[in-house]
Length: 407
Ligand code: DI6
Ligand code: FE
Image (cartoon, rainbow, N blue to C red; front, side, top):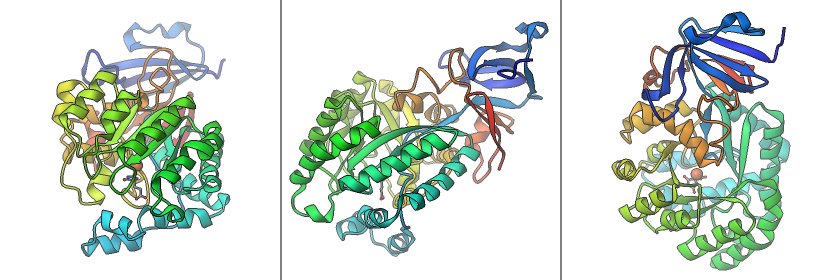
C-alpha cells in the first residue's frame, strides 16, 4: 500500500474553477492525491476504485474545498493597541491618532523592543487560529520596524514561521508603511533609505514589496520610487491605496505591473480601469473598513463591470483589523460590501492566489495543483460565509497531509 496516495471519496467538491457550475461545484465526487498533488478529480461514478491503492477518506457528503488563502496580513507585531481602540470609541479617528504619533508608530515602538522569540510565538498563535479555520497559505508583511535591523527581524520571523509551520508564506517588505520619528519632516530622505540600503538588505528575505500610499503614509512620487526600487530587485509589487483618500496609487501601481492593489475604498473609475487593463487584483479588507468605522465602500460594481478580480483578506494587524478569521471576512465582504458568497469564496481562494502570484500552484481544486484541501461541515458553500463566529472547518490537508482537526 502506498501512503502517498489518497482517495477522497463521496465529497462535494468546491473546486472554484471559474468556468462551469457556481463555485465550480462537482457533487458526489472523487479526488485523488498523489505525492501531495491533485492527480485526478471528477464524478465518483467515473472513478475506477478497483485500480486504486492507498488511503481512502470517506466524505459522507461533506464539502471539500481548496485551502483558504489570506493574501494580506501584518501578523508579526509587538504590543497591543486596545488602548487606542478605547480612544477611537470615544470619538478620536484612526487618522488623528496616527498624526499624534500613535497608531502604526506605537506598534513600531513595541516591535522594535520585542525579541524575535516573542514575536515568533505571538505570530505562531495567530497563524494557528487561521489554520484551524482552513487557511493553508498566507502573506506576511514587515513594516513595524521602519529601520533596517527591525525590518529584517520581522522578515526573519516570517521566514521562521514559513519554515516551521505547515503553511505557505509569502513575505512582503513594507518598509514604506509610515514615517519613523527619526525622519520626522524628512520623508524623502526616509524613502532614500527604504529604496537603497534597506531594500538591498531586505530583498533576499521577501517575495514582494508594498507601500502605504496615503496622506498619513507616502505621496504618489514617493510611492513610485518604492515600487520602482522593488521592481529593480525583481520583487512582486503590491500597494496599500485609496484606503482613506484618493491619491491615484492603485492606478500607478497597476501601470507598474503590481499583482494587487489593496483597500481601495476611495478608488475612482479611472483607477478601476487601469487595474482592469493590467489584470491587477483588488484586495478587499472589510475588517479594516469595519474596525475604523469607514463609511465608503470600495467600488464593487465597477470591479464587476470592468472584470477586476476581487480578493478578500484579513489585513490582520493590531490597529485597523485585529482579525483572526478569514470566514468572518467573507461574511463582512458579503454583508458590508455586497459581494455574493461565490465572490467571497473566489476572494479567499482563486483570486487570493493571483494576488500572491501563486495562481499556478494553489487556489482551486485542479489536477496538478498542490493538495491543500479543507473538509467542511457545511450544507452548502454559502454557509461558510453566512455563519458568524462559527468554525465549520473539520480537517485541513497541506500537501495531502492531515494537519488540524476542527477547533
Ligand atoms: N493600512 C492599514 O489598514 C494597516 N496598514 C495600512 O497601511 C494598519 C496598520 C496599523 O494600524 O497598524
Ligand atoms: Fe494592510
